[in-house]
Structures are given as C-alpha cells and as structure tokens.
Length: 128
Image 1: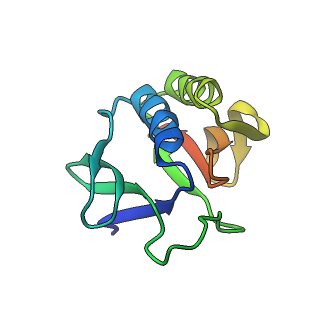
Image 2 (image 1 turned 120 degrees about the vertical axis):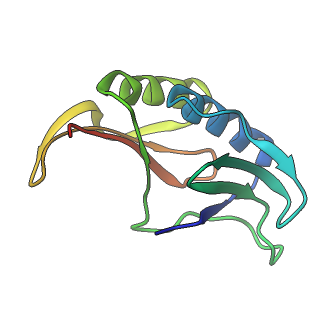
C-alpha cells in the first residue's frame, strides 16, 4: 500500500543513530545519507523506504499527535531488542513495557518508543 514514509528530524545524526539501532534490531541495514529527494538518511527495503529528513519548509520538525509508525518484527525477541536498542540510542520508552498484549486481534508483541524528535514508533509481532 505504501511506497515510503518520511519523518522530520531536528537532529538527523541523532535520528540516524536511533533508527540504525532500532531497525538493525529488526534485521535491516543502516540508513544511507542522501540529499535527494530530501536531505537526511534513508532506509530501503524491497517493499518501501523510510526517510528521516530535515523538513523541506525550514521549520522545526515536530511529531504527529496521534500518529504512530509501526515496524514489523520477525519474532517476539526482536520486539524486545527494538525497545532496548532504541532506548540505548536516545529514544524514550512509552506506554506499557515491551512485550505481549491481548488485543481484539489476538496476542500481539509490541514496543512503543519516541525517537529523538518525538515521533512515535513501534515494533509489532503478530503470530500468523
């Protein structure tokens, strides 16, 4: 459904450190710095891209109130690794501790963090 997601960052280097850590915990490669399509760091997979960029309008980056970006985790252990790597790389754990939760869709393993610019991200593992 999606080709890419971009997040604004006030400190691209701090955000690169955070996303290299949390996405690395999920098995992804480090980001690649680029000036196009927007200055920042980009993470590519066969199915899409994540850009962590300096806002194009020159204004300060801010988080989307009510917005969350969820990353697929291959197993419950990766959810915990995502949370630990994110906190170690300057993120802040929010909501309940990382781990299993009962939902309307069954048990899901979740971890929620705020990145260095305040964006809300999570790792999710759903048993198939």
